[in-house]
Length: 499
Ligand code: NAD
Image: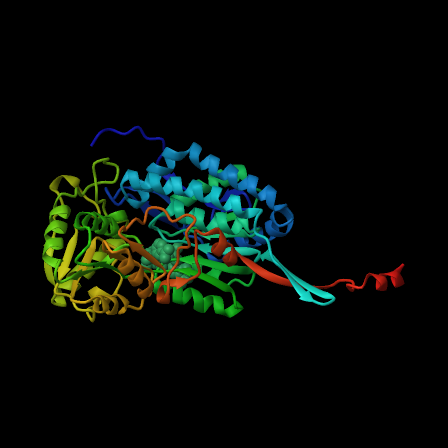
């Protein structure tokens, strides 16, 4: 691997970010952050507490009332654009930090950091265009609506795309006039803390705050009475707990959760494209993608041809550290995920699935959370390996003999995040897209690179609400108020009585 010139100073020992300042937690415990490709510690953050959340929410509330809500929407546009510029100014440092704390190949970190900057620009563009309606035809009355912020938004994010998740759940609420308390994942909090260095220079104090840590600050945020909205991205089981906790104060929740996404290949599919697309859907971020394809549904007429080509394609993929520019599949992002994925692989074997392919870890990659790809055949929909989200480079193969059977298998899941269809007949592709019960459908692609501008969110236990879309996401971060107003009569002569 060629020597890289680093733009980062390590170890990166972060602090909480409250009211525009970097401060220590009242707890003295710190969480070490590991490079999953070497197991070296690259930094640490405070293990934040309930008291830290209290301080952060108080700062966000004051900033909302005194410094952010009073601004015109136009002023907020300028602030968000300044954040986007500053992320781009430090582009390579963010890229390297993400690959170090999350493991993913540099090229994927580049796309993520670029997306984070674009997210601030995108929502800046909507900040001054979030108008309400007027509702006429009420005689002397007319109604109009305004879209008002919630106040303090509690944003809780996972570790799989740290800069992008940070941007998603800060830029959109800020653009709508809210202030934010952000809780990053304990496994990969450094990109968020680095983003705070930018906010310290570009945003008014207290407008965004960060409390690092694990479950304690998460629960404190979701149950806090001064938090008006919870924006959560993470596992479905955690989403359920978040919803229960938020129910105490009837706090509105937006949940972006997991998936077990079906990828359907029909006999007339463009096989080469389908093979490459399936591999992209499976291996982007080493399978740690909510939208990734974990279920491969093959029509029996094309199953052998597809599988031969797919396995040949996988054999060529290189496993190694994300800092190596020639690597296709990086290590898993952390120890917890490594254990989970290896347990699922063992479970699939115990359940009686046939291992159609299992790669090996190259000798020269050293220590790291490496898990080579696994393809399981002879899988039925009742097996846990076919029902539960693995979040790794593991795919199960099922066969079908008719389109309706494919739809039945595809929809036999509690989740409903994404689905994909491969066919040369767009009528069939679009018909299937309407039949699969999921929030996002790919036809003849599995491009989960960028969705900015297109609503992204799941059905069923994959979540509530949409991110990445001005139109739908601004509905999430504002409340509609109806104002009924009396106007003068249509009969102008009646006005003469007033004067
Ligand atoms: P996770 O649910 O374990 O953790 C997510 C966040 O919640 C972390 O910050 C964690 O500290 C916090 N948390 C944990 N317990 C909490 C509690 N009781 N109350 C409040 N917060 C709590 O998920 P993860 O392992 O970090 O991420 C992987 C999951 O995220 C996968 O299921 C994946 O599908 C999902 N995900 C979904 C999307 C989407 O857009 N739908 C995107 C990325 C990841």
